Length: 364
Image (tube, rainbow, N blue to C red; front, top):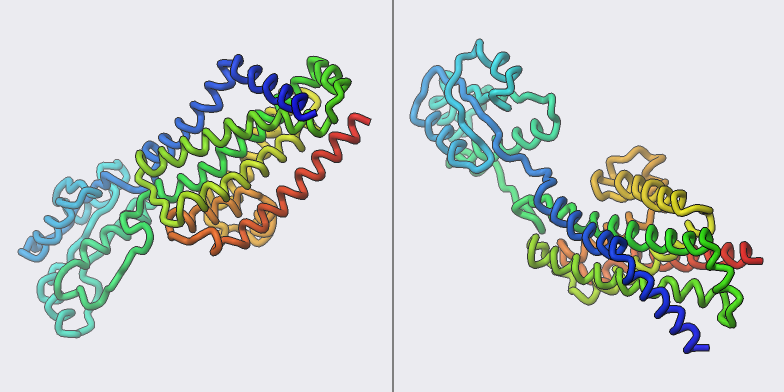
């Protein structure tokens, strides 16, 4: 019986290896997504064009402008007059305009002596792009408040990601997305293809039990997913510079659990779908949208409305991404994310049990 099971695993493995296009998709898409989200797609704001309004271009004003000019995030395009602010923002020649008070130097010295004064710097930002506006304002405040006389009012520290690299946020999320797509999509399409071609009935008349046949079909995809996992972790650490503070072994163990869960989802889809197209649509669309919107990959869970916050609890990727972020970026051990592990394990047991039962019911 063991040899029969091994024969089915070998048969499915050879079938996958002969399908060059499938292997190309499975191995190439994760690499492309990692590079795309790690380098091309970024929430960091760069090349912000800045104009300055300063009637009195004193040494203090010039010093502030010089600090902005030397910062990699900003491009100083020159001084303008107050009546030009609206036009320069509407024409997109500048993303923000800094307006210095005429008594900037005197009021700055008063602030240093503890005298309350009205605002001495006004930042006018084009808020048609909310992300650019928010980041530009935050960056400018940090730079403009670097003056020695104002240092005592601020003490800011950035923990875990001091450089605010967007790759630190995207990589754990893209791992949760990749494994669902690779495992669930490929497994479901493979099983449904057998049913469409009529070869599933041929397999079922063999002496091997149906459950073992299904497990044999899942084993090659599990091994391929493990290879993809190793590849992704290598890219994350050596190409994107993502730390593995929580330990590689713990991250790998948690990811293995998530892989089994993803394979179980693929098996569940195969019991619902009757054609490969349906299986592909369900795996790619129905699963991908909740991952993108409700897992915390792109948008914080805390910012979701109450209804969607509750719904997000049934999205497996939410718990995996949250745990991976804590382990990779914050340096937590796998023990510290035991709750996430327990939830993922419970989901795996439930989904795998339901999938196998539904599959047996259909055979009967």
